[in-house]
Length: 109
Image 1: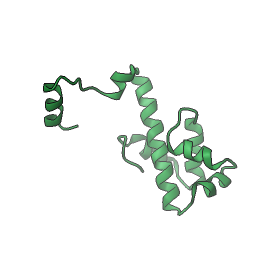
Image 2: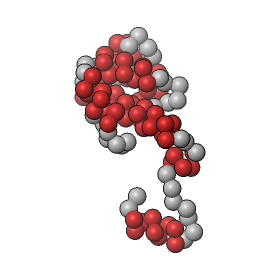
Image 3: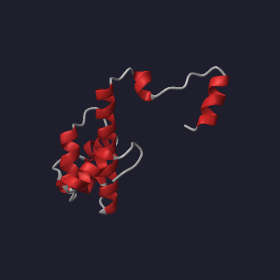
Image 4: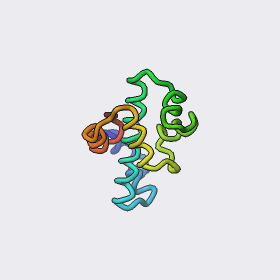
C-alpha cells in the first residue's frame, strides 16, 4: 500500500498493518505461508504455460482436479512437498523452485 493511502486511512481512524500482525503469525509461520503461496503461484503459471487444464495435471500427479485447485489456492491442507512434486512433474528444476521460493508474494516464477 502506498504511503499516501495509508496516511488517509489512518487519518480516518483505521489501523493499518500486515496480515502477519492481524493473524498473529510468528516470523517463521509468515515465511512458510509466503513460501507456500509462491509455490502455488509458480505451479499455476507453469501449468498454464504448458497449456494444461487442472484435470490434465491431476492425471499426471495421480490426483484429482479439486486437489490441483487446492494446490493452486495454497490451501492449508496442501503440503509444500506436494507443491514441489507438482512443479517437478511440470519440468521445474531445483533452480526454478528456488527462484519461486525467493519471489515476493504476488509474483510467479
